[in-house]
Length: 628
Image 1 (spheres, rainbow, N blue to C red):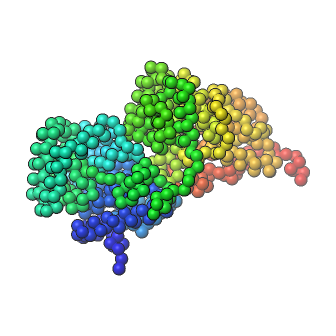
Image 2 (cartoon, rainbow, N blue to C red):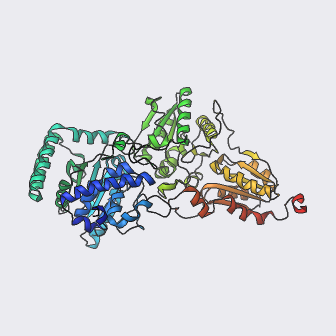
Image 3 (cartoon, one colour):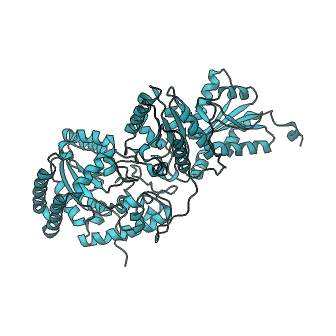
């Protein structure tokens, strides 16, 4: 006899189950997630927290006609399982497999793709208005975690919902966490609601009433009780000031209550917000004990939750270096946008708690906030992933660079981010930063150079940015103290006269690999660590352009507008006509997968570079090799 889960191949199968069976199915899904993700890794904690919610949504609404959006959508694994992708679930985040986020091209049930926070309400409102203009009747449901409400885009959407549509459901999934514990006034506001004893008493009564009687009558009684409670306790409920009727908070793990509530809400003719309380990591004790770790992780032991001991990461080196520099320089402050764990600032915070600032998922605010501090003589360091700094492009231009303020942007996850896919690949930062006047842009070849670049940047009187990859460091010895680097000066690692190979940052390893192959074949190859994307070392380019037959550039970035393009532009401006073989990512969004496999697929290899540069070296092979 098969399990209930094995019988679920579409949302229609969910609708056939009784409330008791749905509770049983919830447990089977949790067991399935824990066992499956132990092999592949993934966002376990967030998905364990929304099992009942997702079941209730699919029990009441009819996708793909009805539209269900998940903010960020890293918590959409159960949605994928229930919409015909269970048998492929073992491929999630694997090469050629299911994406770790919602993806419109993956299923008709994925009505909106995501990967960053704060998009669900705006996109849902767009769908609702489009429905209204077309005369449709489908339901639009936006599920957003409480962390999304620290994001400015969410509030921009809230400001427009009631004015632009009469039918839309917002589900506030309140678990007190994004990746780290949520911070700020909004988090405190939610906490005040859910911890008020008088309000909680009414909700407990409401839950019992729903379970006993069910149906719309009970929900209406509950609503009257809630309205009375709100008038006593919260004379100005935030969401109702925005024009949304507020319901909740209710237990987000009570399937019958969720189903009856959704049935009631979808019949209303005005926009509403349902506040539900869930427990991130529910059903797996290691995930409950390690909320940050189990937000998103690699393979683990499904019994104990233990993960393999990891190597030192660039994020850890960044944070330790920053803490050490802050010991010597009281001007240094650290700013993160809800990513203290991912950026490594968890290591900085205990040592300098008064100089650490987590602003929530609010990258634009983080940058302008940093600019304000810089005007008062501080040296703000914004630790923001490359892919997330995209969200703050205008403040980088308008507030930091235009005013030439000494803010340092430390961009983790620069380059390919592997399993997370196109929403998280940091492949555009060179293109969107190097065209901005006043900014200095650097990329270290290893962890020791990262520390040197940080010290260099702190001493600059202008904006700067350092891009470095996700994951383990190279493993080189570290100097006792970081040293400053001459501004705009590259480092020659190996001299040569036939070809000059510039490997930006961690791509130095590919430059060395190509040089070894060319040397074996009798060519003289120079290997250069550029260090700076802006300003480029033009003196070095001029020197080598007069000696070599070609340049080769390697970068973990798109070719369009990237480092190689900067080299081509500089050579053209210096009237130096010399071929440049640019090795980087093509003009397309790169799928998720293992980094080495994707590099091989798209030609980011020494072999691919060799095939392109070899025709440019005709007549320069060493005579001794020709004679042999």
